[in-house]
Image (cartoon, rainbow, N blue to C red):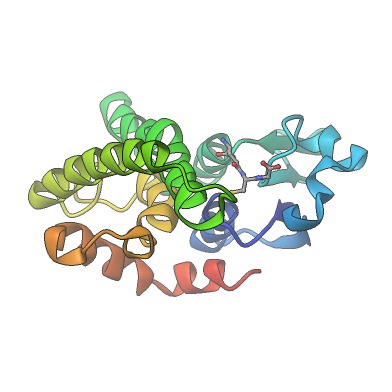
Length: 206
Ligand SMILES: N[C@@H](CCC(=O)N[C@@H](CS)C(=O)NCC(=O)O)C(=O)O
């Protein structure tokens, strides 16, 4: 059994989608980040930066004590390795996936997160910040769009943890003002992932 500590945000959705995709049994512990539950000392023990998601695996490979993983990218890699799913076995295949996964962790996540913050939640209107993040997200969407012109999924023609990580962020692109008509390959990719039953279940967890 895996304990999943999460909330209904893109980073949390990644972990829930992955657990559904690989078919491992899990139980959900909601961490309401709007109510600052991420700062509770018991949760900080599991996630030192007070961010969701985090997991505890009560049945780690090789036995032994329950094993705790924080950072969504690390959680996806851990679950892929544990189950042998959504990550190739060979070195180049693994790094094809890893490089696109890292682009989500270092790019789409933080930059779309900041764009969303300055567009929708900031108490002050700061045009420079909005323009800065919009330009950077547009750049990233352009890279993804070109990539998906030649491959079905981010790392090639197989669905992988790079897609699981990036999908929950990119599906909101229209909510922060991007026009799907300019990103038809990306829209096709979003729709095909959204249609997966495991993805639907993962999105519904919270
Ligand atoms: N790099 C982290 C980022 C996680 C993250 O930013 N989580 C947000 C929700 S999407 C959070 O916990 N925010 C609460 C806070 O910042 O206090 C990961 O990929 O797991």
